[in-house]
Length: 490
Image (cartoon, rainbow, N blue to C red; front, side, top):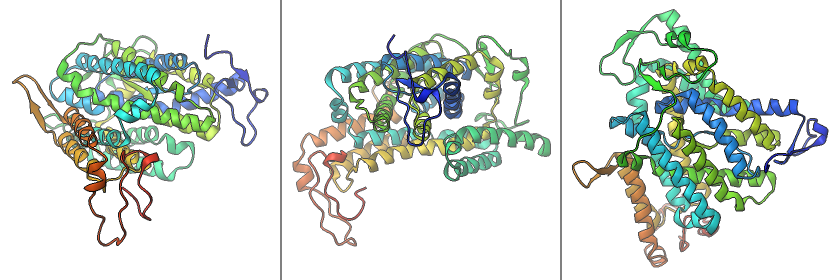
């Protein structure tokens, strides 16, 4: 079967300095299992944190990420080594669904449709070529959509998690920032996982030193006295078995186990913009792997979209969380220079086994709200700033009003919660409306380029004292960016 039959590299021993293990190769099975375990640790924190935040079952989530990863590797014919962990791109849309009274069935139904849309995008890209993505979703638009997805989550931190325990939240956030920036090598890549452990331990210590805390639980209207950690559900959970039908959260609510989705057009529209973020993520990760391995993986871009879309649809069909290729695991490959897909199959099998440990899932679900507050205040900001990173890396020129004005409208509409009402029962707002504005206004303006871009360019800062060169007819792409002026173009 495609993707199997690895060639033994370096006699199965540790590669020499500068040595590379290609996707179709492997080391000894002992070393491969060790690398697979390392990939599990790398994806572990985020893969569990995001299902909790979305109100989905962590056992089902990690089990399905393992299955989705195997499906992805088969679809890409073993050429794109990646792990499909839980996607952060859907968190804002799911939060909006929950805020409007949607339940887990409606959440997974909306995600399932988004997965199918991504799969269809992959089929189209596979047939038409990767240039289609660049034309429809240039970096200027993609960056804006990713930014509004991240910054839309700020009220969730401020209104739900942070008030539950502000001091644990502050200390946890501080630890995550320090770990991500000052720790070296592999430990910096698992800062979220380490932050989860730190916050959990800190909450346990505070319970014993300070006793119960008086706060609300999950945005409840009435504050109560309660311990930060409640393991009553953990004690009742089995060590081995199917994910529990209901698993208690730290705030007293429950998350469902395996379940079938239901569908609402309104809720589907809330998560569809996440497809744009997934396209950007997958394209970036395929490019990164291509550069690391030295292989041209452009012909596999469409397959990567198909694999991720299939994984997301499959996971959500049984109550799991959406998936995406994980940068954390790409970081592990960059550090080890081992790109063997055999290690990812090992990681997927380990994840599936963890999915059948309900006690483990209960421990994760019992994560205190203050800990999640500290983690999400960093994570959500990072998601938003990834949009700015896309702009910077692609030298999007905001001295050009054809880029600045339409995206400004989309960002404010999306982040500010602007709504467009069609009937008493149907309206579009938030991320969905912001995405529509970005796409519609950007392409509307650029349909009249290059006249607008060359004749109506705004002047540079007078203090700079430098002439402003004409913008490219398709500003927003790295290859067609305006000439350098000696300062940043963003």
